[in-house]
Structures are given as C-alpha cells and as structure tokens.
Length: 192
Image (cartoon, rainbow, N blue to C red):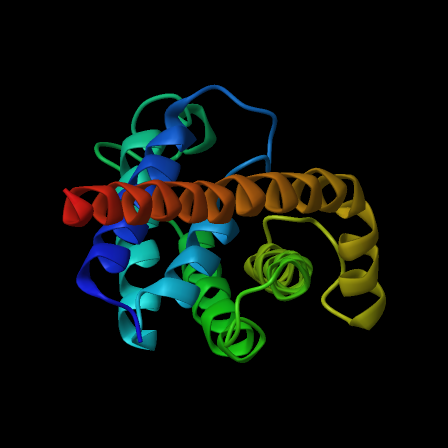
C-alpha cells in the first residue's frame, strides 16, 4: 500500500517530468510514458494514475501548442485549446495505465523495464494510428496505408523507446533514492 509521502513524491516527480517538456528536445524524446508509469506504480488508484498524467499532458500541450509549436496550427486562429492528436495521446495514457498496472504490481528492474517497453509500443501504435486515421499522415485509408504509416514512423519509435527507458529509469531511480534518503533520515531522527 502506498503511503501519503510516496504519493506526494510521485506527484512531485511527475510534475517535474511534465515541466521538462518545455526544455528543447529531440522530437519524441519526452517523459510522458515515464511519468505515466511512475503514477501507475505509486499513486495507488488507477484513476489517479490516468487523471494526473492526462491533466499534465493537456496543460503542457496547451502551453506548447500556443507558443513554440504554434506553427503546426497555421489554419487555426486564436488560442489552440485542443488538437485532435491529443485524443490519441490520452487514449495511450489510459491504455498504458491499464496494461502496465499488472506489470508494475511488484516494482523491480525487470518489471519497470518491461513496462517501459510495453508503454513505448502502446504509445507508438495508438498515436500513429491516430495520425493515420485523422489524415495527418497522407496514406491510403486501408491496411497497406496503415502499415506504411507505421513503417515511416519507425525512426521516431527508436527515439521514443530510448527516451522512455531513460526517463523511466530516472523517475523510478529518483523515487527510490529519495525514498531511501528519507527513510534513513527518519530512522536517524527517531534514534536521537
């Protein structure tokens, strides 16, 4: 069972991860799946593990879509409140939480690495399907067009996979290190 300190620490690390999206980065090299996995592992309830990353993603996308990514919306006048691609990002987060909650039932190097790999594949399949179905990617609306769009997106998958492994490792490692330091500090205080 997660205690309130663990939950607060997980939320803080997730917030830091969400804020890191504002640092210039290579396309698809973001902490989105890593922060989702951290929430899945430590927030205790699936709805919080879904709700927090979705809210953080929506808020950071809103800011990014109206600043540095504004050029991607040339036909849109005024503020970009929501873009169709966001639906598939949200669906990805939901699927990652539902699938990986079973994998992360017990936290270990193997389960965290496995969850990061699964999250990468889930995010790739859902978001690229969304781009294909939305017409963002100009491929035919049949199986061969879908397969062609997935093939064209493979270079982005490599970047995404690498970022998921790195960010998931950083987030889970940071969580465990901070928790260990806090446990030692509490133990030392109680001995005095």
